[in-house]
Length: 61
Image (cartoon, rainbow, N blue to C red; front, side, top):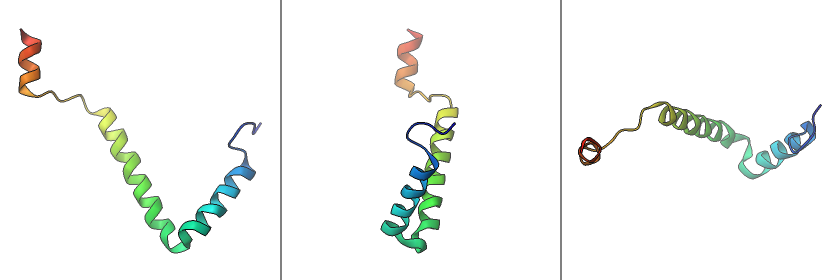
């Protein structure tokens, strides 16, 4: 069932390493920053591509 790189034991080891590096005090800030980055990325993917007036003129010609 859990084959590949993301086995439960691997995830636990990664979590322990992150705790050692950043410490428990920094984890909420780190999680918040990652969450904001993911939301920003999703928002950018959902927005239509905005073109500059110069690009619009080139397309109309």
